[in-house]
Amino acid sequence: MASDFTAVPVLDWPLATSPATRAQFLAELLHALVNVGFLYLSHPPVSPETFDFLTAYIPRLFALPQDRKDARRMAQSPHFLGYSRLGVEWTKGAADMREQWDFGTPYEAEEQREGLPDYRRLWGPAQWPAEDELPGFKETVLEYLKQVTELSELFIQLVAEALGLPSDGLARFFDEKRGVMHRSKIVKYPPLGEVSSTQGVGPHFDGGFLTFLFQASDHRGLQVQNLAGDWIDVPPIPYTFVINIGKGAPAVLAVPLCLYADLRTPAALETVTRGLACATSHQVLAPPAGSSPRYSVPFFLNIAQDLTLGEAMLDFPPEILKLKEQRGALSTTDSVNYSEFDRLPAGLVTLIGRVKSHPDVAQEHYPDLFKQIFPQGLPAHGEAY
Image (cartoon, rainbow, N blue to C red):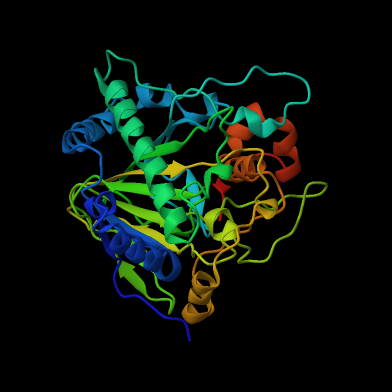
């Protein structure tokens, strides 16, 4: 029987920065990685003012006139960045009741040339509201993304140390020559009454390596599924991040690219740690009727696009590997993730997941891949999970 959790642990960042308490922080981090897959990080090195400035902008972002938001719709971007209307994405056969903007850390798109894999077009500039529409918004978001990126670079070193590796033990997953573009969303979940379903976003695993989530309003809604299959609330705590382990983007293709996967084929950080670190199923419920909207800002830490994770497995000290045995087998969850992270380049897996979620973008910018995945033409909606 697997060990279990009834709450998400809270780790205090200052413990990691003091030689006297660093070992305590690493022990708590190791427990969270192996047995929970989620943690709160309190007092992170992101200034409270940065959180506050961003929070103040979010309602104004979604209050822009609909035609102004649609002018920056995601379908215009080969990088899958921009605005998405309510209910565009689906999970497990139902519409996700969220409206959202996708942004990314600054990255210059590569010059297109013959032989360049399609997935190398995924990274590039975001679409922003015009400065006169929302003065100071772009600057505020870029400063936030800068600070979270710097935090993620420090945190990934701590993850390596907690797992018994050198502090640079995970550096191989990031491209030093080209750099890495990380993705972020700003999400609005309207309350019941304004929407007809409680599904803010259905049960899923995150792609990428790690997710740093800022819950930007006081609403409950985020839930994680423990090893027994019970749903555990993860309520907002001011000025904290909720961090979770990425499992990988879905990737089931029609021939000739198809490599069919088992339902729980692991990916991302779970893959490279041979299942030692566990990705955890999670969902978001819509706010109750009569409430104001719920807002959140996830930041997804990406890895090098050309890397095939099956060729980059990590080795661990025996005492660390024993923790996987002590935890026991992972239980069946409500999330399904079809993934070939261990057999295809990470960028291709991500691209396939984006295409399945947003087929209208793929039809415009990736027509060959679109035809392979959707041979019957444009579906009524995208669905990644």
